Image (tube, rainbow, N blue to C red; front, side, top):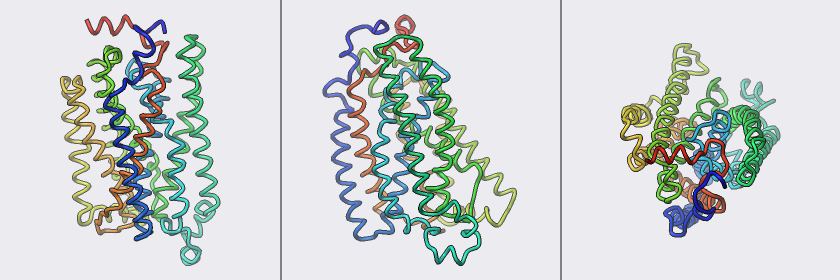
Length: 401
């Protein structure tokens, strides 16, 4: 603990903190949401599975995105990652819950994926061609493999990070660095295939070579936004606030701006490639999302997921303010769901924009339980990693002065 002023207890989440209140609220909201989701399962089973998949993909974002950012920080270094390390680790360690919440998708495969129906495959040459990959057994085998890889990487990252609290040896940091190198490649590979399996195959005639990249970019952005909101709350803890200061939030704001621009680049690249090629297998996907109310959703995404936050995040003073930055981020977290809804929901609804109360029930049900577990996983460990090589007391004491 040579890098820390005070005792270990000073860096734990204090009693009465806002996150603990959020944990209790999350449990209540989550229980209500899951109860309503259960009612929806009885009343409208097909719509329940559709809404559940949407909510699941959204909350998988901060889970796997946290792991991705964490590995990126272990590779590149920097004090910004030290400030977010415990938040990202807690988000990553909710993976077992997300594995449990994947079970309804397994149960509802026939309602979700048309390639699950033998009669439809028999009448469709394209589905027959893709049946080697798109079939029930191989789908489940791949899903199990994805979770196995994610569990292994998350376990290693968490184990060595906690070990570092008691062991300042450089060898621990090197192990985190090399594990992150391999883990980041595995995350990119497995999540690309998972995006194809769980989202793109909802419309099996359509394909995009960068769809997985778009999904991964969205996960990274969602995780970064969530971590910034949590950091703004943790900055009120006296010992933590000395390090998670205006300089750190300035870093967070710059990273947010970069990730937003990256998301826009990926989305625009896919559109330009498909639209200019004008292939009958690809353009109907965008034609559906340009019709009716879906076009208004697309315009809203351009304005409020890119243009407005891009302009706001150019402000240095705004990026250095935890309160202002967290307010912008909260709005962007809502737009992240809108973006995912625009990507996935037309696969079920076609050209008709028809939101359902189950969309909100499943989102709150999964999200409330996820948030409660996140806070529980955050509590046992110091909010800042001890003995991290980038955590130097003299540096931020100088900044505070």
